[in-house]
Image (cartoon, rainbow, N blue to C red):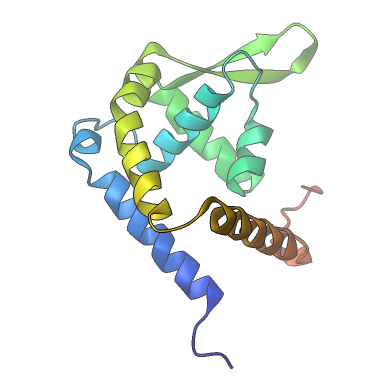
Length: 154
């Protein structure tokens, strides 16, 4: 067995990133949005002008339907998003950011850029492209494990 574990190293890096985001001076002023909420707010904001649905959150963040449902419901209760009907499919509700979420996003953008710049420090564009290729291949590999799928054919 190898001395280093990919899963362990990725988990540690994720924890470190979470700690930086959760403890940033700006973040501490925004008590009603968790670190995960801010990532989701950023994701929806990047797709401004497009319809974003809960299933998009599931796919983007690699979470199950039930986890996404809980997070979206809590964000709705906190007044961070609203669900709106769409004219072309009565079954679907798009996720729309509230004014409060836009305020949070504006406050957090500099923090996100700092984290990204810090993570990218010392890497060439080619190395970053290779890194993303590796990460996407690992995500694809792990998505082929049958027991991580939620019941219902997710």
